[in-house]
Image (cartoon, rainbow, N blue to C red; front, side, top):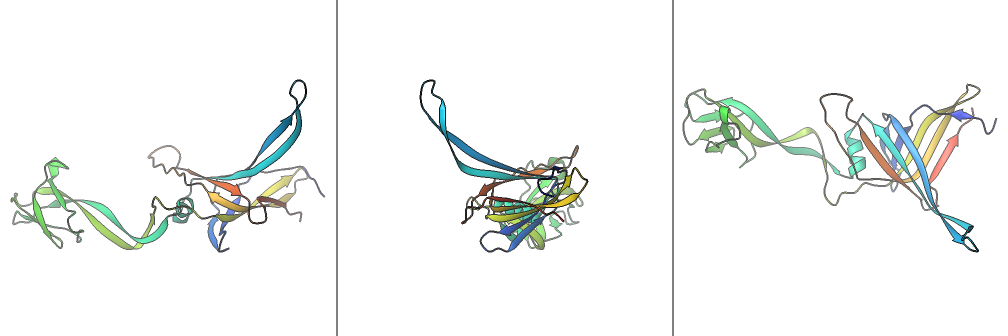
Length: 243
């Protein structure tokens, strides 16, 4: 039956495929809301008494694909930002340590990056720096403290292996993608029909807001992709499959 009345109350699962290479990039099956909006511009030729509209011209066909999700992944951040995936990172460490029995040395759990060690008394965190020298994992204070005195040590360390770092530069821009969407429509006759969308060429906008909160709803992000025309002028396909 054609031209059935139907409605939707289900999100689209989306597969992002690299537009240039045709290689699948991300299976986004964790969104809460997916919205497709088509836009266009109308201009008119006017003429006669009262300046009425006489002829209408349409153009500038475009649109957006908007995704709202509380679930995130590193691949999703890479898709939005166009950043490069790295397997190592430099991060800051803060350790509370006790001075050794000699009153001048502190033993760290790892070797810090050279030139990044700063030591403070435990009751003067980030206050007056305690001068020191560093050799491998041993910090030697210039002025002795009482044995077992507590200090706070800040330093940079390198982590690698099980690390995923998205390196975003001022020159980083996201790729274009073809996006395939998968959801369902329900008819007035209680039929559930597969429904697909194909966005021929999507360009993710580089705006991204990451929120971190200790109350309320889990943090969510919104991804907006501009719908462009491909080399055959395709923008969007809406596909209903009647089984």
